Length: 182
Image 1 (cartoon, rainbow, N blue to C red):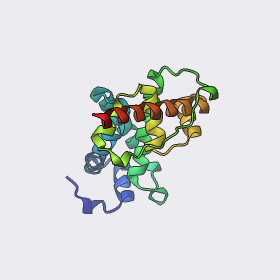
Image 2: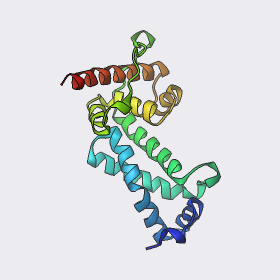
Image 3: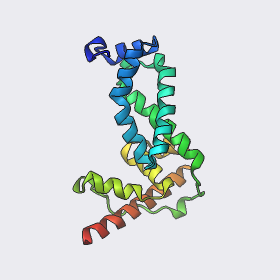
Image 4: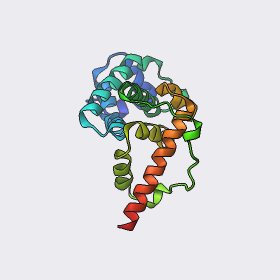
């Protein structure tokens, strides 16, 4: 198996993968599958769906690896973007988006300080969110996409994104307050 020194940079690893070097492809897969799995699982909380999405993701990665350019960012960031877009595509097909408008949106009155709580608790609470709210929450709060980018990815109105995010935060605040009361 190729070691790290065989491919000292992201670019050399990507170039070897583009040449269909199986050792490089295996190294890339082994190096990044955990991160990709965790990213995808946070959206769907379903092992089988996550594994299906990962298979699609890595197929896309290997099919387009020639386009990777280390000058534009890390290989991990490039692959995560493919992973997130693939996950969003799958979830978009499954989601039942309600058309929500600005009058349904309320500004979050209190910012949640996620650092005060364990990662396990936050993930458990996110898992309990309805799929559509969880998707918007992850894309906005964790991945850093704008409402406009999310709306385009998910094929919904920008205000719909704001409403789903507001509802997700409201539900998380409520769940956190219940946990604090225990």
